[in-house]
Length: 278
Ligand code: C2E
Ligand code: CA
Ligand code: CA
Ligand code: CA
Image 1 (cartoon, rainbow, N blue to C red):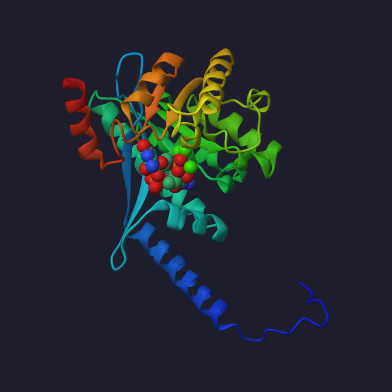
Image 2: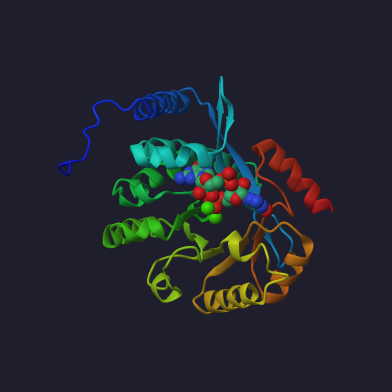
């Protein structure tokens, strides 16, 4: 990039240098993390409001770094997206989530698992074949897999993303729009995508009990979503009054601390047994 004349030429920026070094070392660490299985998946229940069943869960990645400890996804997923390394992370997450879901199917205890994709994944024409191969390898019926995508993931190259989505959907899995309401796309646009589920972002759910505007938005999203044949899930629900409101509004599922935080696979199974008993 050409510099504007008169602008002081920066030959060495110590701040930028250390920023770069830190990122290079983080990228190296992340590559190692994938190779050495320092990543792990936590599962958070998506509870059905119709029958109380918790037979669905979202897989959320965690990084247990040998020196730095627990690193939440918000601290390395955006970085992995910038560097393009996200494809490796996504492949790791898909392989492990599908293997786990396959185990639960084999144990006669099927859980439908949602996996997050990021923007770049939707531009990868090889993704549908990779997913198909993983499903076959783990004898996992596609009906127990859901892939969550965000609206921003569609904007970069809509026709290419749509082709990838159509081929994923043709495998028989579900597709969810994540963080719905935080982007710019309308339901009129989403209607043209092969999606099956809408996840209303936590931003609209937090004050649901006290904010009429939010309540109207959520109610009309649920109604319109249903008219378009979509399942509607509310994210980030933390209290019972909000559960009651969402149930009255006809929301299909709830995901949030009110029912359970993301937890390791074995803890999820224990939680599920307790939840079913209560
Ligand atoms: P997301 O997909 O919107 O996931 C939901 C986030 O909300 C999770 O944060 C979850 O722990 C949190 N959450 C769930 N219920 C509640 C609640 O009641 N209250 C509050 N305050 N938070 C709640 P987490 O696990 O830290 O993940 C953050 C984001 O990182 C995810 O947002 C997703 O965008 C990304 N992410 C996580 N795992 C993956 C992955 O495997 N691949 C990709 N590409 N992105 C991932
Ligand atoms: Ca998600
Ligand atoms: Ca979300
Ligand atoms: Ca999010």
